[in-house]
Length: 205
Image (tube, rainbow, N blue to C red):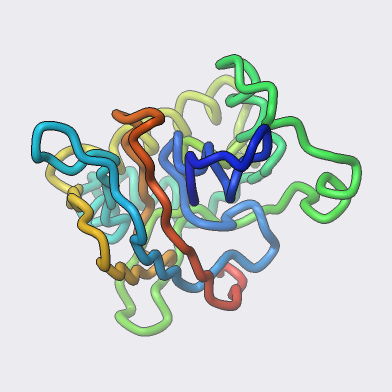
C-alpha cells in the first residue's frame, strides 16, 4: 500500500481504502483477517498523516433497534470489486479500471448482511460503502435506502477507532467484525509505504 512511484509506475496499491470497506468482501470467501506493517509514514509539522479508521460491526449491530435486527437477519447483499473501482473512476481515478482477467477473477459475490462471529458468537453487520452493491429480496428502492442507512449507521463515531501510524507499527484486525477507511490527507513528496498480508478467506454465513 503506497503512494510512491518508480517512474510512471505505482509501487503497490495507491488508491486502497478510499471508501469504508472490509478486505476482500467482494470475494466468495472474504479474508478472515489482515495485517498491515508501516515502513514509511508521511509527517507534516511533527504530526503523522494517513491515519486509518476502524469501525466495529459488532457494536454497530448491537446498537440497532430490535425491529431492525429482525428485519435484516436473513437478508443478503451483492458485493463487487468492479463496483468499488467504478466509484474511483467517477472521482477521476483513471488507473482504477480493471482488466478482463481481473474481472474474470472477481465475479459478483453474495453474502448475508448479518452473521454470527465464529469465535465470539457476536452478531455482526456485513455491509460496506466500497463493495456492497445492493440488498437482495427487497424492492430496489427499499434495498438501496436500507443499504445506505446501514452503511451510515455502521461508521458512526461511537463505533470507530482511529489509528495514527508510526513507522514500525504492525496492525492486525478481524475482517469479520470490522470495516476500515484510509485517510488521504497527504501527497508526494510525503511518502506512505505499508505492507499488507491477508488471511485465507471464509464464507460469510
